[in-house]
Structures are given as C-alpha cells and as structure tokens.
Image (cartoon, rainbow, N blue to C red; front, side, top):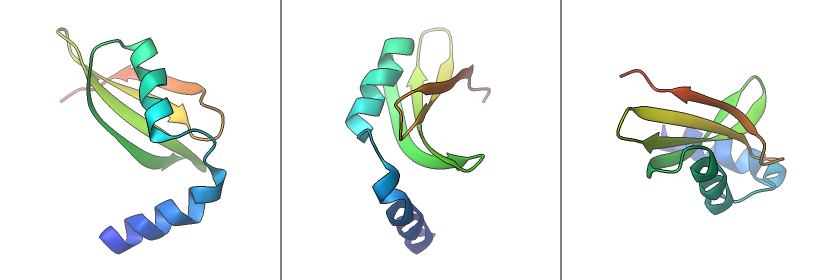
Length: 79
C-alpha cells in the first residue's frame, strides 16, 4: 500500500499548483475549527486534497482541487 501511495502521489506531483499548507488554509476558511488531517486522493480523475475538520457540532470534509485551489465540496462526515 505504501509503495502504491508513493507512486500515485509522485505520478501526479507535476499537477500540484497548491501546497498542502495552502490547502489547509483554504479548508479552514470554509470551516474554521480544528484540523484533524489532510491527505491526497483522486476523484473523477482529479487529484484533490481532502481536509477533515472537527467542530463542536460534527466533523466535516473539505475537498480542494490541487491544481486550482478551488473548493469542490464541503460535506458533513457521517461516522
């Protein structure tokens, strides 16, 4: 799994336009609470950052396009 993840991440490396740190700042502008984690994923052929943010009323997931920094979706994470 680790080898696959690194190959996946490295194969998309040149498509990143924003850093993980920038993605965190973008996510926290939409849901300004405690960041739990941020990671890379692919959705419909687009590489995205997924930020998980915990609030007093629930946990939210913010998906951000790695090329544009645009927020694709903010949704409540059902556990």
